[in-house]
Image 1: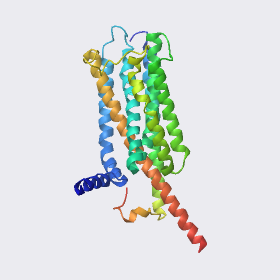
Image 2: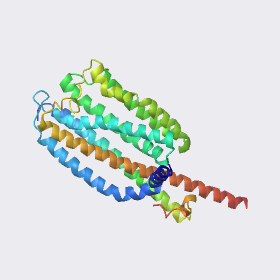
Image 3: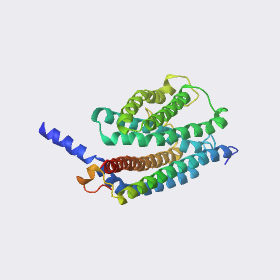
Image 4: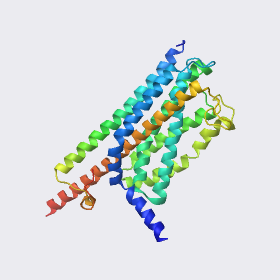
Length: 57
Length: 255
């Protein structure tokens, strides 16, 4: 590595952090929506289209 | 004629949200695994790559900067196709796809700008110049932010879909400007060196890590996009079900 190591590490570091936040946000969103769906299903709420389809995931 | 109609009907039947959810659930673990593998190999190849005779070790920044810049444009192109899907065919998945892609595209565009700046300081002697390539990519970043704001400003997806699709289509004019800005104007940014007439100008020892990293990040984009689309479909189902629950509760109180 040359004397530019700081710039290279900063570029990889920022990219890693930003992508980790993006991936984390998508995972948290997934959990939130899944829990909300499960809670509604437990309460017996059904979508209008669900009677016609083969049980949406 | 009837055959064409039935073919179209079959295609639309296949691409409904429920089928998409089944497909995504089966496909995502494999896609995620492949992404991790390709990115790990790409990262290892990048670390092994020799220094450039002019850029020195900073060429390593190119292995992430170029894929980010490429994805910032690919993501917007996918959103433009989705916008056509919304406006022309009114396909229910088209708006879901556009809405899910926008934040991912914004992150990749921001990273292209930041990594480019971190390369520019040691190589050009400046963090930033308002030249054609850098400015047009900055405008792309602002477009993403505008689209994200618009998709979230209107609660009803049916209403926000059309407005977002029109804004996305208008903004697509920026993509060829970004691509050809380095040829049309005098800029600090170098012209195309990977995809160009007469072949790449990059030495294979640097080109291979770049290509593997580009494939890895493209796979990462598709993994995240598919998962974000799945989240968006769930979100819309939750909203629809809450509405049904509220209506039936209302009916009960009236009776």
